[in-house]
Image (cartoon, rainbow, N blue to C red; front, side, top):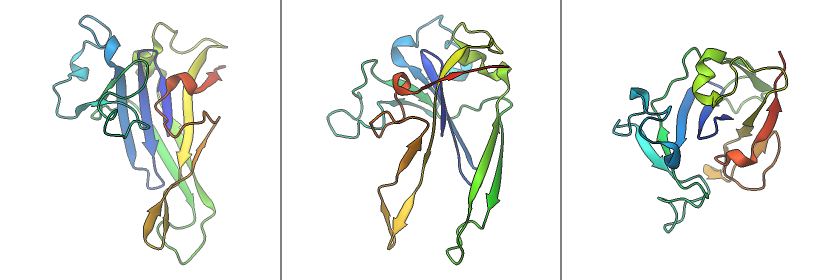
Length: 178
């Protein structure tokens, strides 16, 4: 999983070992106003794949729809596609074959800087040397034991102490150099 913070929004990218891509663009509801940078046809809240989202840690009946994050809920646009995104997977082993032991897999991701403009929030594109962007870089491993899915471990560039990746204020600060 890769999340990239854009201030009042963020982008989520997930890619699995089969190179299946999942993308969502989130906009904090308090920032989604008429005339804002998000007031464009791409972010139509009436689109059938536009949802409200409270956060992954907010699954209880009392908080699921509103969430517990101080900023409140987000609009989630699940039909979003990052223009120019390229992904490639290399597998060292075999997928879904329990007869052997795999060594692992690697992923390459390329996103054109021009496509990141919506996330720049006033920052230069491409970034200047030393610019910092908040990102979450992590991995979740689905585990099945005796036919039952068990709690899967999460790994991240830095731990933030809660099993919810939708907390931009907790993400790593990545310093960029050209």
